[in-house]
Length: 269
Length: 300
Image (cartoon, each protein chain N blue to C red):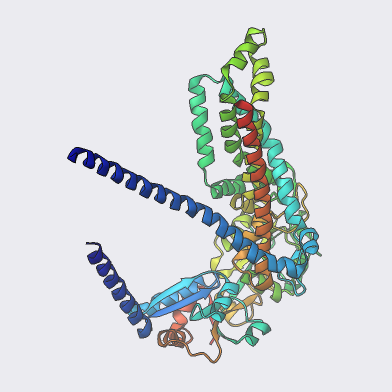
């Protein structure tokens, strides 16, 4: 009896192995790993691709830009997703980048706050602690509370590099998600924060920067200055699997524009 | 003859089953032990390299944490002090409340009140920490901002208040158990000698249960120092040196907030923080066991 069962088990396992291999060699799987900020756009792209390629399945780990880049380097995924450009040492390690889209970062304030326009310089001075009171930029006489993201966050990296405030931001709070930032700013009339334009809701106000209000149009024509690239990371010199290459070609083609725009960011090509 | 051999057969079978069951339990027990060992070994192996690279003194006593800077610095003194201050604050508020509650529950409360309060305490223990954090974020943090007229309420104080509520159930439950285990003869003797009920509870019952109560406090310390989610949502998470109204980062939140995006030495350093936290917890557990052992010996 035992022998029969174990033979059966071995048979089942072997069958599983074979079918598993089949799926692998067919190249029906695309593994993605990386930026949480890119979850919206990549999710939409996967969906639209799947509608015409039902034999392809996706796995997507929204682990963060850093983890995604490491995952590509380790060969644990096909395409890495990063919401910042690659660093020199990452390119030297054998990675290459393809910009998929541009994401505008909105500067947000509480709804009670009368301030609705700031220059890039004012934003820099606010975040470095040179300007500490809203009255200095045309608001009420109260201390400015700086809300930001945690070290390593793509949004923080993007915001700080554009406003030239890297490593000198005098944050009052460092929060770990876009939602937390928006919730906190909506709770505190003195707060200022930043978040992806696509993620901002009606609970907070977006300020215009240098007189340009953040929108898809102003990001795509480049007049809105606080924006960052969404990058596809691959290993240079290493060919993608057929399925991954096909998906890559699709999302970087004009065909994908509508989907990219619909998810709130601006196509790069 | 036949009967006897059947009996012997039965006994043999029973023995066999018992040995088998014994083996299963042993394996299950060993699983737990091996999990602990695995975690310990993993933490030590992945925590040591960063400490070696940064230097133990620079790591433990450095005052700046700038993990993603061009010239990164990895000093975790702010986190260590914040964790200690935060826990101490929570104990300062939570222990008196928890202690008085447990004396009331164990000795004075009428059965009906006791049952209701007991289930309330159990419920408090069962509330997920993210819920504590959410309530703290939406009620406590704005409240502190208004009451103390500070620009922002996310602070060490907010974390202390949340933590002191979170440790109440562990303190109350263990203390009540210790107080209820005090032999009734002690109290009867005291009462017979003319002491009032309150005198008896505080001069006889509490001193006899003091090891158990100490264990309860240590358990509370362990809960407070290990909490991350709720604390992360109300404390602001900036690596400042601790101050009551400062935005601060705990050992736990230092690991949790940067892990998802970390790479290289930063990631290794986060493991080292986890290792430090682990050592703290081991120390606390050892203290807990010490008090628990003393309580057992004291009551025998």
